[in-house]
Amino acid sequence: MKKKISASILSADFVRLAEEIHKAEEAGVDWIHVDVMDGVFVPNITIGVPVVKAIRKVTNLPLDVHLMIDRPERYLEAFVDAGADWLGIQVEATIHLDRQLNRIRELGAKATATLNPSTSLDTLEYVLDVSDMVLLMTVNPGFGGQEFIPAMLPKIRRLRQMIDDRGLNTLLQVDGGVKLDTADALVKAGVDVFVSGSGIFNANDIFENVRRLREIIDKDQ
Ligand code: DX5
Ligand code: ZN
Image (cartoon, rainbow, N blue to C red; front, side, top):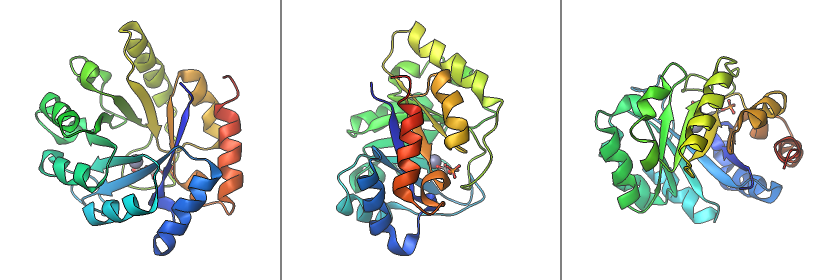
């Protein structure tokens, strides 16, 4: 599979969100990553269902919605109805993880199991086969522009091995500190989907940022 770039709009200019999304789209990103934070599971509050609905109207790219909210089961249907193609829940935020991953699939979206940096891969042991994607957080969730945590590299390699050993199609996604200087190591560790926020939207030229990131992640293909 061609490796994918999922542009995190957390670092975009919210006042000109449609324009920023269109630029990212023209620059060739594959998905739009939407960070939903509730001020409880993470210390920050961002955007919710109405904004996802609005974004759905301005792009045809798949919407990759990352819920950083407590008890996400309360909102799965609302986010799928709003247009989420991929819906991610943090494994730490729900008690019945298997049920919620299956529920996302029943609702017609792809299910992403998301792990904080300190959360063990053991949490995936019995749910990997019902996860369309696993998102390994490579920063502590809550804010854009943080430093990549190097201890995540062996974790990524181990998950790659688990997925391959089981012959699954589960995608391996990373989020946090993904930039030109970290991308190469992530490619080598076996990442399929690269979420990048400040690396795309913060530095001045979105086109150039995406082009350079793409060059690195496509190098070995
Ligand atoms: C952080 C969010 C990320 C964030 C990444 O909690 O989940 O998606 O936007 O930002 P960068 O790429 O700037 O680390
Ligand atoms: Zn995210």
